[in-house]
Structure formats: structure tokens, C-alpha cells
Amino acid sequence: MKAIIVAAGIGSRLGDLTKDMPKPLIEVNGKSILERQIEIFKKFGIDDIIIIRGSHKDKFDFEHVTYVEDTDVSNHDLLGSFMVAEKEMDDNLIISYGDIIFDENILSQIINSSENSTLAIDYDWQKKYHDSSNALLDKVSVVTLENNSIINIGYYENFKNLKNLVFGEFIGLVKISESTIIQLIEQYKHLQKNHQGKFHDSPSIHFGIITDMINELLKNGMKFSATKISGKWCEIDTLQDLEIAKKIFK
Image 1 (cartoon, helix red, strand yellow):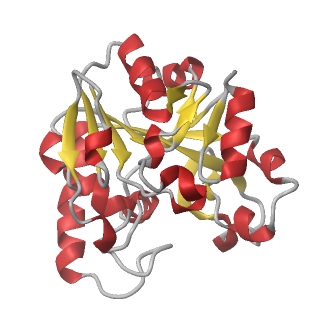
Image 2 (cartoon, one colour):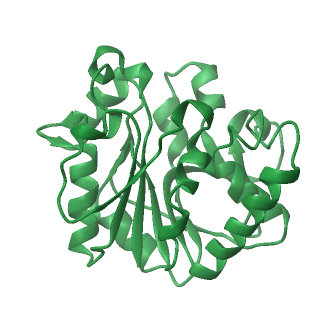
């Protein structure tokens, strides 16, 4: 099994902290986001770690990892960044967003899931947003479940008015089988050539995000399970998130 960390994000919402530093290298109580992820992956015997990096690539100095360069960050979004590592996608994968911190319990739960392709889902997500603006809540990536099967993944604003559905927040951590990855790559290449207009939550396939691609696979009959996680995790997108992470991961 390999781990691919998508770490090419700019992190503009963190202001001056990311002016000369990639967001995944921001420190939380003395350890960067990436350092924390790498340590946990290695504890679980995942030593084949691929880091997709973008701007300020000279700031990345981790040893015993494979770097893949995203030299076109301004012309695509998260999905495009992920796909630059296509040549490394020759095994079962753990895909991780480069701006999340999670504890060992969460990684253990997704690795040990009996399902081949599964998303780490927080079912207690809404309590985190009780004092947030509606705009922030609406852009949370959620899965909708029916009869314990994922039927959709996307921004909460698109599904919040649907009734009799169970919602959970996707935390940015995926286990995906090699066979599913092969189909994902084939479908992505087809869409690049043929798709026009809006692509799920994004303006186009070229500026798509990873959840768009998962949603596309769901619509084409592929199955992803939801692993209900318990443990500590945090996405660091804003200065407020960073302060929260410092308290959670003391």
C-alpha cells in the first residue's frame, strides 16, 4: 500500500503564514502538518509515501519520500494536482489531503476497514460548525447515505434540503483499491477530452476537486463505503482552524 499526500495547495486564507511557506508545512505545536502525517503512515508500515508539491518546493526537506512536482497549480485544482502523480498509482492507495491532521485511531480505522474503497467520514461533524457562517457550512464536503451506502458526495449546500438522508463530513482521507484507481484514471482521461461545462461542484473538469471525481464514479455505478471514524482530526484552512488544531493536538 502507498500513501499519496496532495500538498500543492497555496493556503491563501492563512495570510502571511503561507506567503513563503506551503500550507502543509505550517507547524502545529512544533510539528508540521506533513511531518505528522508521515510519522503516522510510517507507524502503520506505509513507507512508500508520495508527496505532490507545488510552489516553494525547496521548503520540502523530508527524507525517504517520493516527490512529484505540480508545475501547473494555477491552471487546475485539487483533482489536477492529484493526477500529476498518475505514474505512482500502481498499488492500493491511501489518499490524504495535505492540510489535515488526524490521529492514529482514524488511520487505523480506514486501513482496517474490510471494504476495498472507503472514505473516512465524521458523523458528528455539525457540532463543529454551530458558530460558523452559513457560507462556511455550505461548503463542507459531505456524503449522503441511504441504506448504509454512499449515494452522493459534495458540498452540503446541494443536499441540505433533501429529506430522510444521513449526512457525514468527508475528512479528506480515502482508501482506494488499485482496480478502482485504474478506472478512475481511465474515466478522468475520458472526461478531460469530452466533458464540457460544470463538473459536479466545480466550474469544469480542469478545475475539479477529488470529491467531484468520486461523485462521478458513484454516478457510474462504482461503490465506496463510509468508514465512521472516531478520534481527533482537524482541517487547517484558516487562522481559526490553526488555533483549534493547536488545542486539539497539544
